[in-house]
Length: 81
Image 1 (spheres, rainbow, N blue to C red):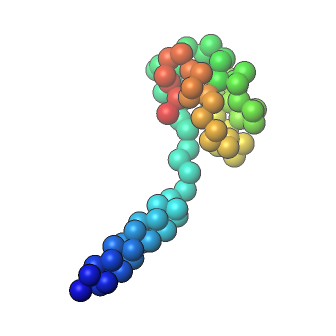
Image 2 (image 1 turned 60 degrees about the vertical axis):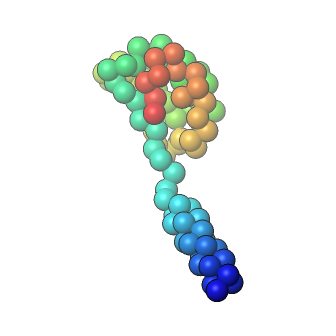
Image 3 (image 1 turned 180 degrees about the vertical axis):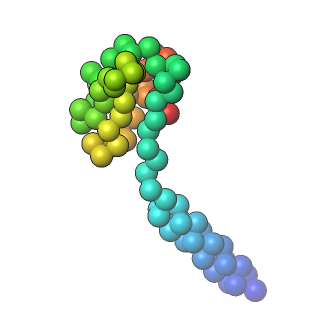
């Protein structure tokens, strides 16, 4: 019976691991109401994935973004999530 319990736990953990692995990387977004257009995120982005849009607020090009998180760390307004 102990062996069955251990096998069950291992199977459940494998299922959770596989399903979590299948979830795509989250996209980063910018809260336009919080963005002050300071450009800190633009300067730190190693992929040049952020620019100022027509509305004067930062915009992330999701096709270039590698989700390194540097923009989140540097944003003084906590506008990137």
